[in-house]
Length: 118
Image (cartoon, rainbow, N blue to C red; front, side, top):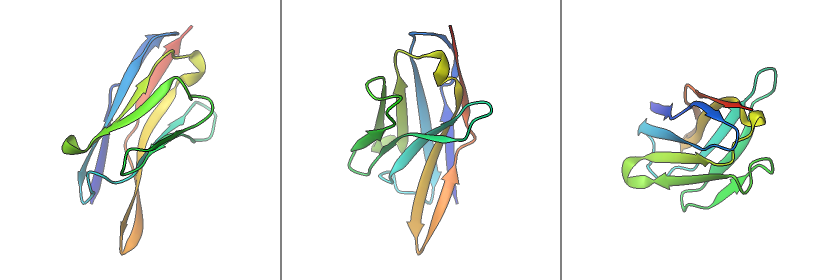
């Protein structure tokens, strides 16, 4: 079993910053590729960005240049640094992972709320 636990959400003014953390535990490698998703009210969940086992990152166009994903393998933790936040970034942010072990298993964190006020 795998647990993904997000933290760091909150209320911030437009232009501000937040850093989200996702701590992974259980049957998952500390180097497992990880993703961040978000879901705004009334909208579909969307991919924010990904980080590979080697630390390569990819981002949605809407957050490029403002968000940065990083990882600390020693702590089995992935981070989402969000700068220059905009009201349209308001959403529940989720940590996500596919874990391959014979079969492919999908895991989600419980989500953390980010609210950006204008």
